[in-house]
Image (cartoon, rainbow, N blue to C red; front, side, top):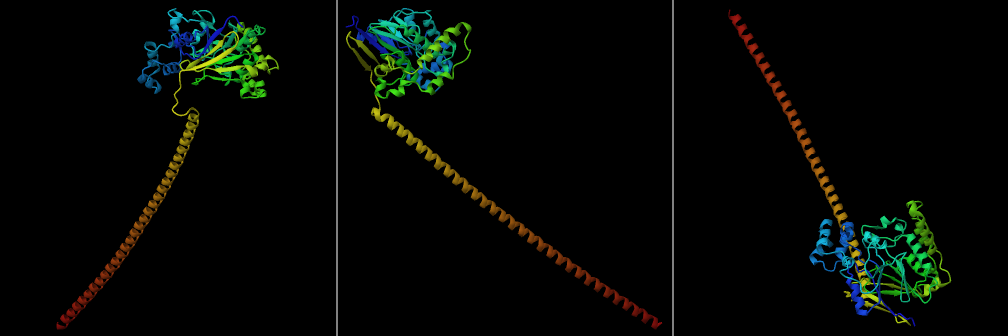
Length: 452
């Protein structure tokens, strides 16, 4: 029997609501707390360092926010400046400042890693021992702790291959935190010092879930972890599994070449300052050892025996590991989840409804397009018919005008001919009359001459 029984609270994603920690400790008389990131490492100046999206997310997840103000935030009705003022005046980012000033304190040792949503400046200060809080211990590639018979180690931050080789300034900025490849290598070397530790159970802490990130799964096996504890995912209930519950040994035995290449393709040649280069290169060299295939030894045994625990957000619950000195027991606690439909039916129905909605939308769009095409064709036909009718009417009018003009011309010609005939007749009559008159005059003259 181990002489120091332990009761360890497992909690994650407090997002600044740190009172959850002491509440759970008091309820279960815990001897320690393990916190898996998104702790709420913000100080008074953090509101000016975070990017706009981080401020918006903090307001969206704020427990005390007024419902009307929450609606405005969700509908983007507040400018980034107005959102910052709201945080500054009404809704502080975290309770952490009260612990920094000593106004509040943690009741038992709290071992924490940073998450992907923290103020990078505050994280760096804590990593470099520039600030400290009583009973609050950071876990990273350099810091590991023993509590009872548990060896507590791990590394926080988001795991994104494209950020594996960024420098510290890029990985700790604007309220987002990323882990680096060399840090995992340093952690690997740190834990080699404890590989011969007797009567010890290993707890590996990560923020991201090894169930989602194969590299972290492989890390836990290479470091022979008995327990892997993570957060980040935000499910309503704590999830627990071992690899052997859902997979044969071969798929998990080694990372695929594709996954290794995905990491290696971001490896830069000469990116760091000279004074950093040696330390970082050593970390990278060690990290590539993590990618080596699992051997048939304690690493392989961990395939069967590593218990993976993915925690809910602190507002939804937590878990408890109890070591009574003989056996280990594990308990999970949930504050309740109220689904609108049966939980297994929820996703299925939701997807079916969405698929049905999408199909209906597609059909409606197709019908609308068909109707539009039909109406366009009808309009085109009508326009063509109208144009044809117009052209027919135009042609008819043209022909009518032509005929009228022809008739008019014919009538004019006839009239001209008639006038010409009349004139000719008149001229003939005039000539006849003239001739008659001449004859008469001649006769008269002749008669006169005779009389003489």
